[in-house]
Image (cartoon, rainbow, N blue to C red; front, top):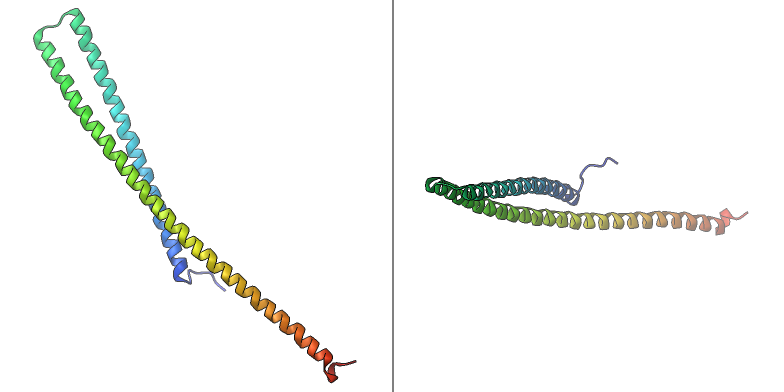
Length: 154
């Protein structure tokens, strides 16, 4: 007997497995993106800190008002960029969580179908064992009947 997806349940299991795998790939991609966005934020934080330290050093050494304004404007633009980067990190973390939930739902769905398929297989095995037992019982009964019949006596 060849083994092809012969039942709707087997087809559902295969489709659910493919959906779960795709959801897992999407989750991995979102997690990589989250890591990259977080690294970009960390780099921006370090750059802002270094620039602020340069401003402090310039102020200790004496700085003209125009240079001071330039430093302050640039720090303000870095602060704006930091805020946008923090928002991007938060949005990406939310996408990761949504993708994780979707993967978990796909995994649950696959598990449900696998459970149904296993129950069906167990029922088939029980039915087969019953049939085999019935055949065996019939053979034994037929042998006993032949042994007890007048033609079957020795």
